[in-house]
Length: 84
Image (cartoon, rainbow, N blue to C red; front, side, top):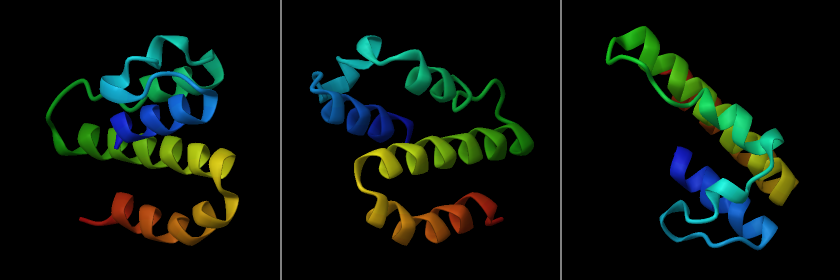
């Protein structure tokens, strides 16, 4: 999910999208929140925290790209992050 979010942001800003090659060109307003999507351990609470951060980052990028699509996907993404 993180990689796809980076690719969407890169595409929107006109940077290379394959293999996140344009990621280093993203502004800190986009790249900063993506740092929270990295997990520091494999325990369940940490993985859930990282997933929630990834959902938030993807939703924010979708809102910037296509607000109507973001509105449709937001409930599904929230459910994904909340599911056990």
